[in-house]
Image (cartoon, rainbow, N blue to C red; front, side, top):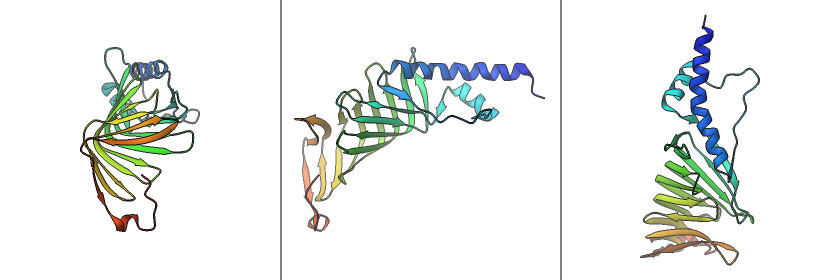
Length: 207
């Protein structure tokens, strides 16, 4: 039979992990933490998982969502995450997904191997195999991307390649910005476009 002291110790260990994550969500005023609730009496983790989470200070499947100052919705989710820094106001995540949706329905989905979120600056940095898919059919790949989650501003950190309806484009940098009330994706630095007439046949030239 499991002793009460063992259960209490596990509870204390888990609390040491969850409380900094709760504090992180409160400090990040842009976001509301959303998590699925277990049924009454249910236990979300097995005993071995409780010990692993307490030891590694991580939480599974965190989700954050909110609105930017210009009304776009943003959400972040990950396979696992853990607090970083002495004050616990930063978060490192694995298998990160970022979704941005404008008020008029434009959408950008971003996936990356790893990422970090800083509550104080309200920025996220995604790294490793970054793929950016737009609702207009454009696929952009790069190695790192920085997102300002208080406004609408995405910026690649390094070269990008974009495959769209009219061909393939290479550039040194890509930015998603709001300009004159419109959301535009801007490519700059050594821009090279390889036009593919077969790819654009019967389609518009919209990027």
